Length: 260
Image (cartoon, rainbow, N blue to C red; front, side, top):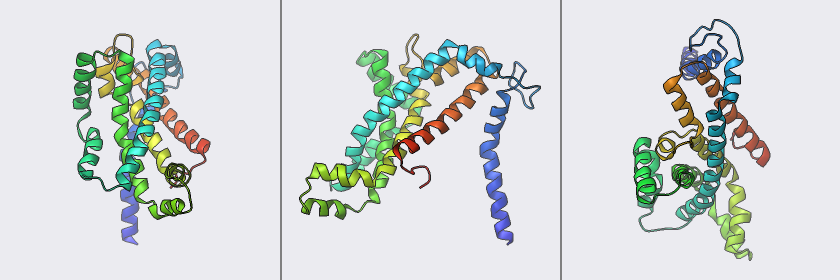
């Protein structure tokens, strides 16, 4: 009994440490004071209105959303077959290849961003938009391979082989048998990749150009000159947008990826 009470207390303590700062940020977004302070001195929605009248935030949101969608879809097109090949076949140097694919998740983001800047901007001299798309694709691809690969590890490939013996071609079996069975993993990979791309700062900072900023980099630039509750309002909207996107993706695809 005491053990259960201690575990409950410990869980509440951890929950508080994780979510109390987020709750404070959410509350300060409604503060009438022009500075971020807690407790708040009054209630107002003007900081949220300020978000929607700040051009850098609006253009940054549009760019971040577009980049996240396109980069994630390309990562799925590349990552799902790659994860399947790594899980299905006995390839020489398989472990080394997996480590190579997952290396961007191990290397510090600032190092990845600077490396991409050296290669994409200075060496290849690509336009800003192309550079950002390539950078975000490379950032989210490892997450797709890791999550889809984990889903494939739970899949019984003998089912696919039975489909082959019944006359189903390998490509058709992949789409009719394999993909439906790992669909929750694909949805989870989509959401994880989208969120990581949308909220990415290091790569976006290095690859952004004049007048081209993602929402996180626009927010960082705003903080350099202002530190009012508009920052908290943007944070609240980002949290709300993440929850809504996860809910819509799950309901639209009809897959319980969030509850499994």
